Amino acid sequence: MNKQDIMVALMNVEEFPTLPQVVTRIIELCEDEEVHVDDLAKVILQDQSIAARILKLANSAYYGYLRKVNTISKAITILGFDSIRSLSISASVFDTFKKIKSNYNFNRCQFWLHSIGVANISKMICIYINNRKDKEAVFLGGLLHDIGKLFFESYYNVQYEDVVREVTVERCSIRDAEQKIFNVTHDEVGGWLTDRWKFPDDLIHAIQFHHNLDMCPEEDILITSIVHIADHICRIHNIGSGGDILIPQINPIAFSAANLTEEDIQKISDKVPEEKENIFTFMAIMD
Ligand SMILES: [Fe+2]
Ligand SMILES: [Fe+2]
Image (cartoon, rainbow, N blue to C red; front, side):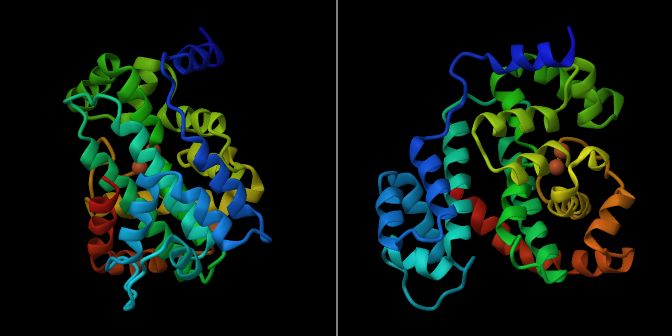
């Protein structure tokens, strides 16, 4: 079977994970600069689980606002459309996979901690290079970069146990083990999945190419590189688990795309311990 056929077979699982329509609507509205805050709030309130998480986060140490944020409209005004979009997507992806039984050999808590770690470190990199406009895009890219692993684990858990075993026995990377067992890897699966969810192209590319920067379209190389670097830094700090104990090297493409040196990476990395509380707060509210 070629890759295409394997992917089609993988994606034809029964009860394919779908995101609630509300989320698609929220994504659309957040892209419309003319939209009124109250109209967006009305849509968010149709999904109580998303609305509750937004309010909890807005009132948590994660954002550190002193005044109480007690309505969704207020949360939108304070956090902005980009943050609301990424929080809504985050909450619904957590909910979608929560409904599916977990494989006992795969630690979802560690998986999400790694993902949230990469999301927050991606944001730190964006701030470091003074790029405020892509902050939320890289956050989401980081949060969902390894979502293909969760898809494998949720729908092919017997085979994914073989992947986990292979990593332990052969001490190889989880990506090499996936290639051996499935003939496709989590980055490819993640790209397909988020394409089916009709996510924006930059986000799909950050997920699809985070291990394969050479293939990434030029226009999305910056955000993909940021996620790639954040994955490396997160593994150094052992936040959650990336599925194996190997630390992938940073691709030289990422250094030049983000205009960063080894010294810059070290400076960002040194600040990660201060970010840990935020990572755990986000995890506690989402999970
Ligand atoms: Fe990955
Ligand atoms: Fe990762």
